[in-house]
Length: 440
Image (cartoon, rainbow, N blue to C red; front, side):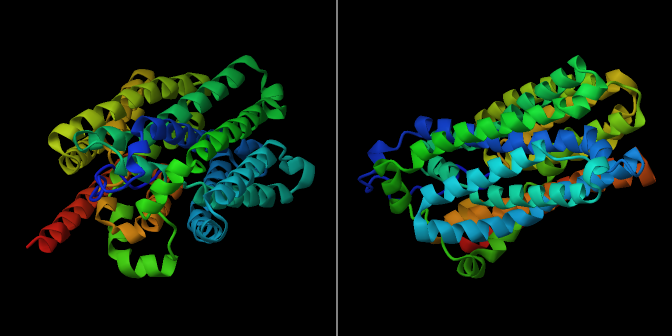
């Protein structure tokens, strides 16, 4: 879903590249935003359904809490499958090219998403419903690994030096934009349909919309990737898929550091999206419609905060901004649980503050380390870093946060958020030490 290469990458040799004159960052940005919005819309449609729909449809034989925990466990399967998808589709890319890779990946993603829309319930086909949901989720993860197109890397390499932070935040806009559409759709259907109609057919509609958005995103990305000008740019920038074993051997340390550097923003990502929805749905009497509307408004605020992160990064630097936002998230973790447990007003404050911090941190978190990758390995290393970052930072976050909160109270979810902030600061510190050693 999110690329981990930013505009902080080295641009040595731009002037000598004959294809560079064709590289318009604004044109690339359009393809990047469309592609990321489609991926995150798929992400949030499943995430919201995993709280509102699947516990009742697929796990009706247990309590709502256990059903949600089981649903979150299946939620994590996509993140486990994603690195395998990268390996498989990198091989397809090397053999048949980026167009073939993207077409196959997006068709797989669309097929898996639509398959969920047609999923029968447990009462119709028994435990087979669970296995079919898990299979579709695994297919989504494989497809997400293949959907990484390198356009964000291309955008980074063609960004003006004085606007690197600005262009670095552009791929991150897909997350709140995808959440806005997904939350608004579910809020509309849950608010305007009876429970019988919603659980019968209403919840399926957003998955059909996801398929349509994926088709649009596919054509938008193919339009960028297959043109001779951009094909030449991929070649001249050495943004070509390398062998995973060779990439790990040469860039393994940077990949690991890069996977943990955005942990604060990824932990907060789920603490203001999936987890609070599950908490409110399970342990309060509030309507999910109200909370989905709050998420929609919060996501809009997040868009503004991400844009602000680009402005701030170009003036104070990316790493200072990331460290400062991680410290702010650590402070927020100390009182966030109390806000979430303080009724409607407290929930609203929790969400708005959380989305502001998320925008500032997430906007620049997708590549603080990736600028260290050597050109020959940057394409594959960036994809692997994204896979591992989402696996460690997001894959099990809703499950872990809900388990901690139900067994040890909401304060433990604050401790979980604090741990992510600490890991981010440590990863950035280690990265800084490594950079200082290289320039001695």
